[in-house]
Image (tube, rainbow, N blue to C red; front, side, top):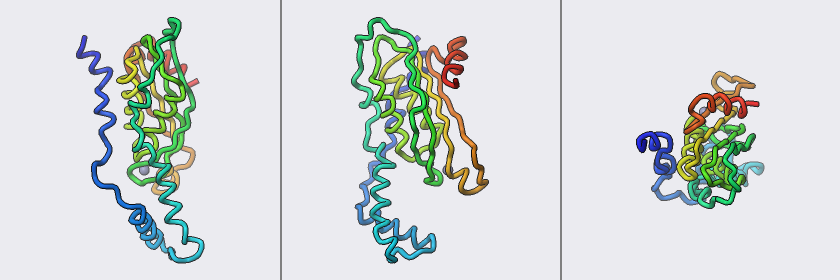
Length: 209
Ligand SMILES: [Zn+2]
């Protein structure tokens, strides 16, 4: 039985230990790197329109990659157990996703749907959106992002089931290479009761409506 539980709810370490220990470059070093990329693109960083660009890009990076400074498990640490016996589906749909593909550093944009079956405890719904932010605002691939969101929720909240569906478009697919427009990718992770029929079928219908 324990083995089964462990398979459903993997340890949080598996989903949070991905932050580099290397010393962080200085802001000036980061801005110099942007200048190099501007020159590589074929423009001149010293022309007027580009003078403030490296500083702006570095500030934008602070937002796009703010997830590295968030501890996803800690975001969910405050739970509520006065739920009046509520034990049915909790679902948050269409959570905006802003992420960056780790292969091309191009934008990933989409939505995340999260559902769980509470086991006497619930989290504040805004915390589910923050969880998406904590893992989304990093260099990612969509498959791992899906696993990280689901496994962290499962590990921290220990619900009876977790379902996460991510639907996103990848700029690296639309703006370069095969240049496929209007294509979106769907990934999902179903844990606990949601991995078993008939709940599996029901949750997939509910989440895709
Ligand atoms: Zn990519």
